[in-house]
Length: 276
Ligand code: NAD
Figure 1: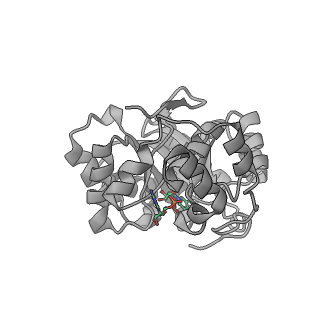
Figure 2 (figure 1 turned 90 degrees about the vertical axis):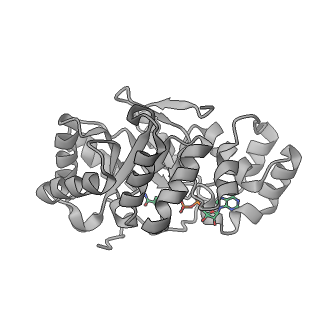
């Protein structure tokens, strides 16, 4: 595949571009993931709370692609945090996926008010030691939450999956991650298709390269060095979103994109989000 490989801090490699399935109903997930695998995606990002691990696993099984050529990520939901609850929730995720291991397991949100993420991560270390997750990491962790993990646990998370797109560039978080050997993975890389893809700067850069707005936004991410997981259920867009490895943004384009940062989230604030 033309998708570059990223080497994580434990030596495991993962594709820099994958397929996200948030808000894809389980009955549609098998079809969407099947389309993505046919289009060349080899990394799939699901989560227990998306309630589509089953459909995702069905597509993986039906694809006939060797397991070691695929990279499957799932996430632990907030209500399952805590050492024992995590071990049980992981078993249930594997069961729904129909797999004997995942490539990456993430704590979905820190939920600081529950103060369970350190114990949760210790269960992740056990799952990792048992070979049932080739890599472990976190999502939506702020630097202060990562500092605690680094101080109180022994396996450095391979990555932090955070909201990141041209209107929320996350410069401080990315710098912090880089200093600690933690990769940054961008969720909602296309800004959820709301507004960003119509922004005049994005439209102009797309015209210049004879590409679509989604494609130039994905190029911006790739050239930043982050890992991206765009989502679509539309076959033509699924293919469009992986067709981004034969052109490059230049310094002028990158300068124009730099000016789009508004520092505003589309999603919840990780410091306070505690939905279970
Ligand atoms: P996204 O930024 O990938 O945008 C997806 C939306 O953009 C689509 O629903 C569609 O409306 C539009 N779109 C997609 N391709 C397009 C194209 N080529 N042209 C025009 N419009 C297009 O948003 P997302 O789904 O929120 O994020 C991607 C993935 O990130 C999710 O599926 C999920 O796997 C992950 N995610 C994780 C968290 C977390 O808390 N860890 C939160 C949100 C999303």
